[in-house]
Length: 307
Image (cartoon, rainbow, N blue to C red):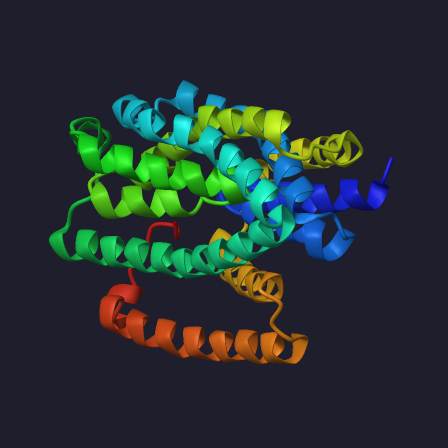
């Protein structure tokens, strides 16, 4: 048993439980860059781990009623077959060129996209809170339940997200939830997270089945990941009400930026410089945005927690 791998998975699980993000986006680069696991094995192993870890969180949201089941249905129509096809594409690419290089490059691009989407998610949340404060309204559960699915657009989101997950194990907690926030601004954050978690269960199961058939699964990697990540996710979920998850997400965005650049074989010196520049730019940009959307007179009022 590789206990270092168990501890790393525990840490990733805590981040997932705390923020609802970072599963594939963090676990896969940790395996590749930290433990020298091949990219395809890392993706396959992470998907099987997610198939075990995801149902626990989704069950909690289902019991609380924070799931928009019609959105889950239409997302599944697109995401489940697309996730399975992701493994088929990897199998075909492996026969033609080099599957490891393909997966590593694709993963690097998706990680950079995930880092960008984390920032976008924070901005949308701040904008929505400012709008609610200005209008003196909040999104109620009755309003959320009346949101009608945009069928074609939702299926397309499912297809794109499913393909991303099938190819890289990244996307169910980053791309899809951002798309839902943009498409359904009346949905409360709890229902967005619950809907995303529930639709991710059949998505990652389909991707995991595809990788069991066509990927490169190593059980000596999968078992330590499961042992560490499941209790980590439970711990993170319990800490989510006390720790500032917004700060964790900002740190996660910088980690994803660094991991994505390294996956694309960017030199370490340039990677550090890019992360430092991103930190400075994000800090200054975020301060300016807060001055626009959360002026001092409004900032004195208690604000809802950051998404």
